[in-house]
Image (cartoon, rainbow, N blue to C red; front, top):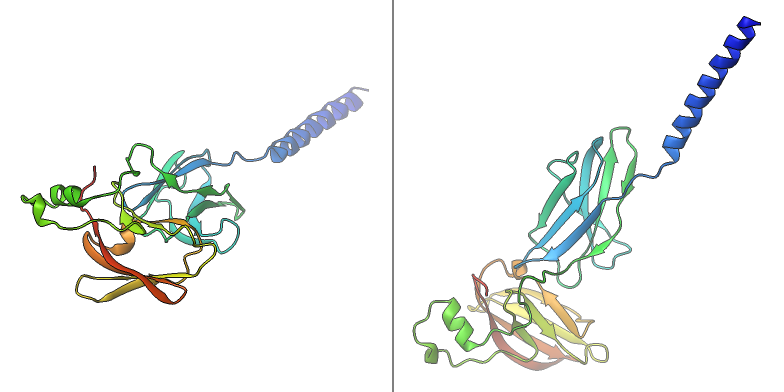
Length: 232
């Protein structure tokens, strides 16, 4: 009788252990909550997660939020609860990000997808004018800058370049950028949105840049813009 009772007790303990283990397996992992903020020509990602057994966290970026995610870097300390990553070369247009998390047991998971948004602490709505450029570039004679920004492509106070083409959904626009010497930099082959923000980092340095806008194959505007080294 005593032996039977002992067997029952052992069975109950084993059953409880198995049930607890399965219950722990059913608990879904807490996905890291992270943000992507557009800074001065860069995008800063911050996240908090509780994955001490993570051996690798990759930062992945896409322009469409669904497909074509590519890994652009890795977290320096994947096991830490608080992490950050700076995307120094964001792409033109909207940048979407997600995290690829690899665990020590070779299992992996993806975080949610987030869209990079403007940092609300930076005044990004003000268009730079001639007086701003004179001040930012330490020019003493403001009257020596006989220049006005384009209504289509211009720099804002956060240092980013805005492309504003209201007819972009109806017409085909091609934009080309050049160094002041005339050396070709890059082009936006087809502007598909009426409003587009280009990060300063794409231009690699501060200063003057020339551009050309083509509307349905015809030159619409040929002008220039200034990217400051410092910001408001």
